[in-house]
Image (cartoon, rainbow, N blue to C red; front, side):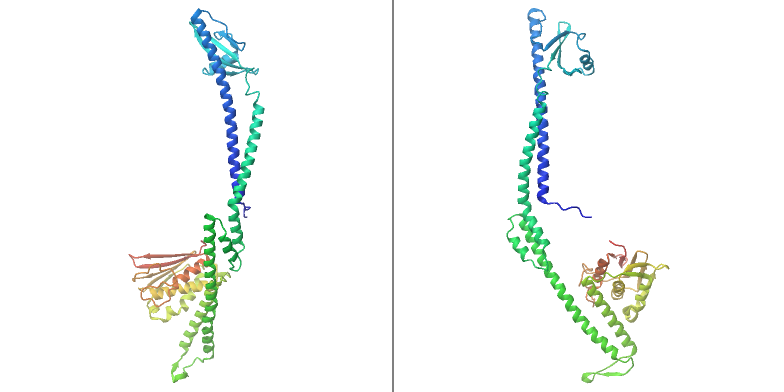
Length: 435
């Protein structure tokens, strides 16, 4: 299930709005905290100033004067101090502000006159303004934050639209590209702003142009190869169907004779059928028409391919090979396209017949993979798995491993190649498990 599509402008607006709202809230908290801090420090300084006046009068006259102001209460010792303040002070000796259960707030200062300890309490409940104006301040800060966020959100939306509009137009143009017509996309790329979006538009246009050119070449190639290969195959099949499998001499123009015995005609027919099947599979790969699958026995298919492989059974190189085939007694079954799987196995066998440097060949089939291992002495070319790359002295067209890899990619199998230079062994393994 796909998540709903989002727009760049909306994302930018949400990001900037969220950041602005966060900063506004932090600023509001800072203002409130700072106002309380200022107020508390003013009260503490007033109390400290009153203590200084009392100490100064005691030094000058030896008398303890009364505090100046109705908010102050001077106590000798802690006996007359309210119990709540006394208990809290015992727990927190350095605390100077005390909030009582009756709603009053006191600021405290303790000092010594002679050998006696005195406690000065300041009842500041009637002088606190931060608490009285808290609702008003919070309301104004909220309105200010809302106004600021609204302005910033509008600017962010405007900025987001300016940034996202070219990208959205480019996305719409790419989405509407149909039948290889890139005229609208090329025209749009010319009018893009001169920044990274313009570079992106030009890169997309170039990539789609190259892709269309490659697709056009592939389409023409598929049509051409379909005609150029199928036509001679059809002619050859018609000639073979009209030829009697006897030792008669077929007269041709220029009075040349070719003796066709039963074995020769059979070999030609098998080769023609193999060529026809290969062409069919190659065209299926090119047209992506290889989705039909069926349940196949790998044991039987491998056995049939080995018994019917022309190069393995009817060539000098094939006759020299000693195949060691290991497979389980129980059938190994997979769901695959029969033609593709036969082409894959036959190409693996042809690769062994053509390139094996020694007689020993090991074929191992298990429940999940098929591996061919042969001896090799000739140096391998670089990137030997690529299409058109041939080994030294090879008479092929360099499509063996490339075709095997293409079939594996089509069927979503793993294609593994391993070379052991010390032992001189070359292995190709196909793992029949989806990538």
